[in-house]
Length: 203
Picture 1 (cartoon, rainbow, N blue to C red):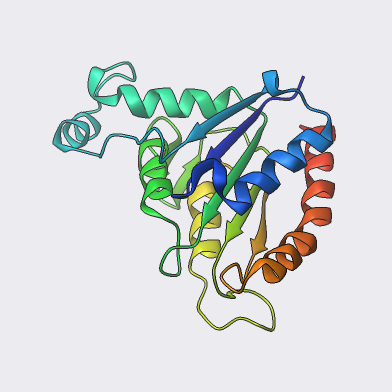
Picture 2: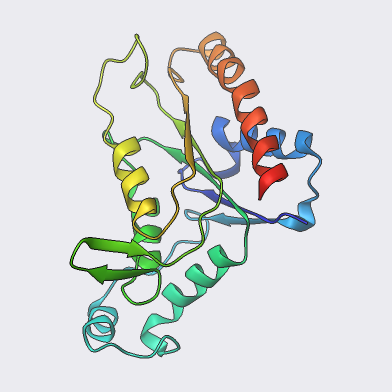
């Protein structure tokens, strides 16, 4: 059975519009909760990257070194799942600090990527990845009023470890009242559901 890793990255946790839509979409897909692993990066924050981690990396420490414990745990968790589903807000034009810290643990030389003369080469298996991006304003489409550094950065960061099958779904205009929220959810619900169904069929 396909296994899904659901990363929830925003400060509203399970009260966010993005998380609720993600859970609704997963429930409608028919996949059981037993095959979904949730990691809330706010409710259970990750430790910061500190000097001991940096020294372990530069000294080519073993994968099971204690300094790399969190990194190894998060990479192994990602490896054990067939689909990655990221629910994130856009903070100041890009990803929030919670998601950046997860990436800092997961993007690790000799483990999730190899350094070559041509640049980073991903060592992880590609997998369907859905990214639901919540924003108070508009950053995509004809209504966009701000720059979007989140999409290109996250696409590039995931590709550096081998994840290229990445699809973004903007949940925009959420500060403009209940009607705007309902419209945003309505615009995203069907394409998100269709892509999840495809991912479950091919993963």
